[in-house]
Amino acid sequence: MLLLFACTSVFAQQPIMVGQDLTSEYNRYMKIKKAGVTGIVVFGATWLAGEVICVTEQNRYANDRWDGIDSKEYARLSSEATKLPSYKRGVAMEIVGCVGTGISIFLTAKYGARAKRILNAQGDVVASLGMDLGPQGASLTLTF
Image (cartoon, rainbow, N blue to C red; front, side, top):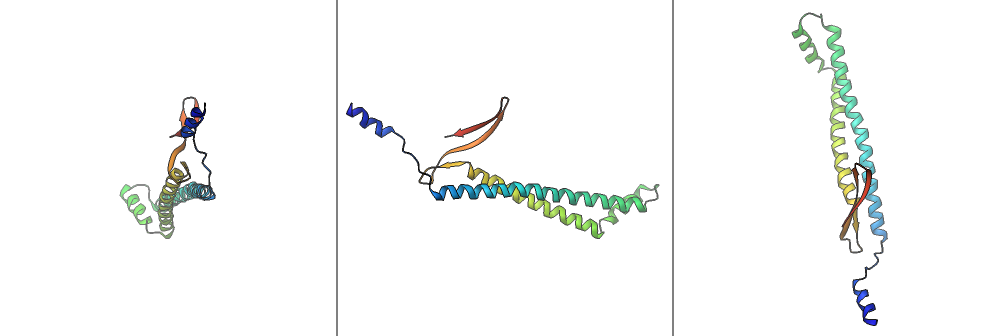
């Protein structure tokens, strides 16, 4: 009987004490991930608004000055509209939105993946936590 208890202690799992460092690291990763998601929404809206401004200003300028007969004249007026300050402001909004969205996607992916890792006391990755969508609905997956 004593031998049985001695053998079980060899195979027993050691409880992992989560230190303050691991918890604060997880919280930091989740804050950055949430900021990334917020950035995707904000910068994506900025990108879309810039596109709308460009198209609206270009069409307004060309339609107000076009005689309705010559299509080459309409193309010239559309090209001329790209020099307007309001069109350039829309292009600037598109660029800022595109770059910001890209950075936000990168932050969300990088720090979201880091937050899903389950670490042991030595800081080694022992498992990962994730979500999966299937025919029965959403499920939580734990991968060792």
